[in-house]
Image (tube, each protein chain N blue to C red):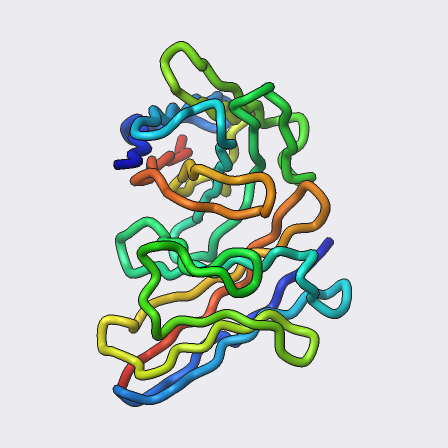
Length: 119
Length: 109
C-alpha cells in the first residue's frame, strides 16, 4: 500500500532553517508529484507548493517564495522541503502528500512533522 | 490574495443530510478549479474524500458526494454517521497554485 513516512519533530531557533523529508513507498515515485501542506496550531490547512517527482518542476505559494525549496531524490523515492529564515509563525505541523497533476488531486498524506520555532 | 470561504460550523443529526459549500473570492467556482474535499479528525492527518468536483476515491464512503451548487463547490453528507464529526476542507486549483478553504467543523448531534 502507499505510504509516505516523514522525518521526526524539529525544534529550531528563529532565523534558522529546517529540512523535512518524506519517504514514499508502494507506488512509482516518478509518476506523481508531492505537495507540502502545513497547519499551524489550532488553524486550518495551508498549501505551500508542489514538486513533480518526474522532472523536478516546482510551484510555490506566493507568500513563501524565496524561503522554501522543494526537492526530490528519485534514487530513494524521497521528497524534501526546506524552509529558511524561520519565524515563530512557521510553527506548524508540516505534511507531504502524493498528488496527481491532471486532474489536480491530492491522494495520500504523510503522518505530519511538527516544527517548532522558538528562541 | 485569493480567499476560499467555507461555513465555519454546521450541526446535523445522525441519519440526516448536510451540505457544505466552498466559495472563491475570484468568482464562481467551476469544474476548472478541480475542487477537492478532505476530512480531518483531531490529531490526525487529513484524508482525501473527493477530487475533480465529484469523483470519489476508492476509500470514500458512498454517503459523501461532491457537486457544484450556485457558483460554489459543495460536499453533501447523506445519512450522516457519528464518525463523520470532523473538520472538512475544500481545495481549489488556480492555474498551478492551490488554496485551501477556511474549513467547516461538522458536529453530529
